[in-house]
Length: 392
Ligand SMILES: Cc1ncc(COP(=O)(O)O)c(C=O)c1O
Image (tube, rainbow, N blue to C red):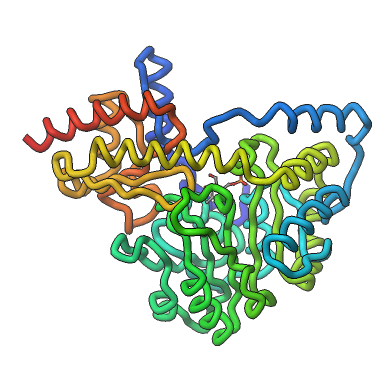
């Protein structure tokens, strides 16, 4: 049978990147005491209060069809949140409620791109980004992010990649996997460039509430000068420890959401009212849970730094936000997949090879910060011993 070319474009983009995670699960199933630091899940369960709200809403009959934009309860909560945080009005017409950041990004690129378009984005990047861009028929154009710049995407590097086909600059702030936060000045320079070339700015801000205390987070929507060309996506997956609820949104110009709405209706025919009610409560409830999580993750990044930075030439990069730290292993190996597999085999510690996130992180490992402090300590002890043996 014949299939759409998009299935070829996406084949193999996903699973290869998660080799380490699969290998870690196999070893754990075989009885090894694996410390799995591959996936950035929240380190606490979804709060009982949110689960109770979802259950109560189901029992109250909030199980019918909704609409493509979202339930009023959630649109109200999002309006209040963005109006308060960004200090100017955001009405219901600025939002589309969608199943998570992932679906929101898919919808955004389906709305603004078509075959032949190019999308400029930082490398390293979150593992699904290439697929998101390619699913819209567009071509991802990576810009290498450098540790010297704190892995922050710089307008001057983006400028070098702009062609007549460029349609969007795709930001992720705070960034997975590097934990970098773009500064207001970074965003301003990118905004000026986007305006000059009439480009969209798409910003994945799913980690916006998980800052580690140093640099404050600034949304790409903060500067009203660029709001006609800016779309932000986020969700409650990280901030409220609720990834399984699949609940997020896109916020952009009213014209953008009007254009995207038929696409959303075509694909989803609305969202689930009981999840909308639970999400409304989460969005209105503030950032306490996220702040607690961020504090614990900052502490674990510090454990990694204290135990491993400088050991056998390893260097630890502490994030400004989010759920991951990075280890520079270039003193020991230039092949992050081979190193990560050997490390798992030798120590039962699983980490993602940097190569899963782009060419710029070859020679690095990404470490999830959601294991307990004790497991993080234990992982460090095993890695340090392995690295010293390897260096000897
Ligand atoms: C950068 C980034 N964007 C999006 C997602 C997916 O988020 P959601 O659960 O809201 O779809 C993740 C999940 O790890 C992520 O790290």
